[in-house]
Length: 555
Image (cartoon, rainbow, N blue to C red; front, side, top):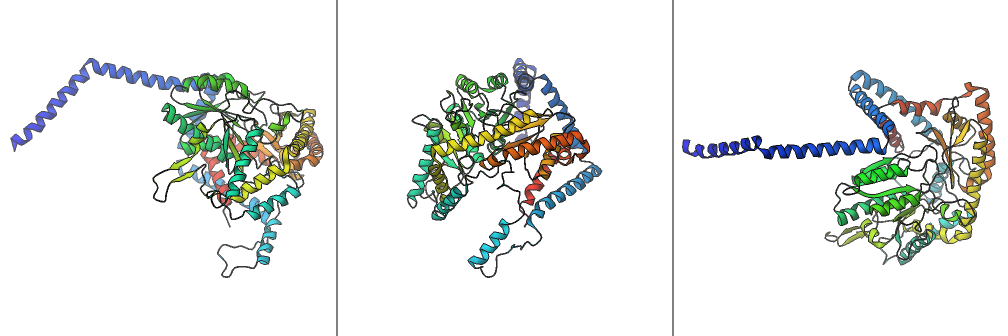
């Protein structure tokens, strides 16, 4: 037995002496130096981004926020603190539930199980009419920001008929529904032409702007993994970019680097963008992005300068035109001020455009475009060895509603260039009416330099912009609150064209009331956003947001 044990013991001893020799040798010092350099480079990269890209002031604020966040997170572990948070969260959610459910009225007939016997068509229509009559905001009167991009009653009736005709169609099966395939291809081609795509430009239809952006992120991620071997991708975007990029970052494990915008123009800071790209280009950056226009402020980033950066570093440039959609392409033809933004800009490799916004197509349609098919190929999902057969789909969905494609095609054909041109003139004109009033009120200021259909404005102390929003809500207006900085946002639609003058007058009167009597301030929205801004641990705010989403599914 002793002999059997002696061999492995001797072997272990020999290995130990080898390791001991390495520990005392020069090799270990070399390894230590390499590890030290790698750690140093990692921290330098972190500091570089924080200080040189974000600026020293922002870096200090980020450190302070991080310390507060860690402290608050630990504080939440105390049962008494968590109990207090839970109580406040419960109260907030109850208020939200009342706000949502109160609009449904008192005589709601609940249907939470399948009826034992199916209802007649007339009964079903009666139920649908009840849902339609629930106390909604006055979107038809042009008092709701964005939300409903209405092209007129006649167009709506046409789209409803198109939907009826193709209600059972599915573009997943082009051999069964060849007409749907043709309409989708033609819709993409028309939008490509509108955005001055090159001859080999291409695209696909998606369910909306979020999916268009997500698909572009997926395409770039897979393309640069294949062509450059990038396995830890990063995208560099303005902090005003649409939240769909944050969603794509979470879904596809892409690191998102947010670049500050100029506080005056609200355009992305090109110098800081360049610094961020330089620090990550070799083995990480896959593309950069800009907006034309962005959702919060309606401003367009300097796409020409972004194109030069993309070309310099041999990476992609995506332009988010989801909101600019059918307004931006017609500004020049309408004789209105515009900026370069489409495929005519050297360096632009992809663009997203929502046909269901100012294209007046049914909700659930958007188009993502690429400069060439080499990029688009990486958007596809392809599976050649599935037991169900060879599977290929252009976007996230498998089966898709052909009825929405028919509706989109019908809207494009019905409106035509002249229809969209007139809509552009009317909508931008209404935005200008509102902007002129905002600029004439000393207590208010326009955020950035709006170029299309969106305007955002803030207020000077002691006036709180959220109080203005609350008082306008009492007059029936529904605007979108912004944060960082605090402001109100309006996406002007065709429905706002006849109501723009009335809104401008109401805005003037509300500000005059607050100036004359500050006690009229409601402090409702201001309290919500003020509290959210003061909480270091944003997971508390996210709990409230999750609770709101939960309420959407409460029957």
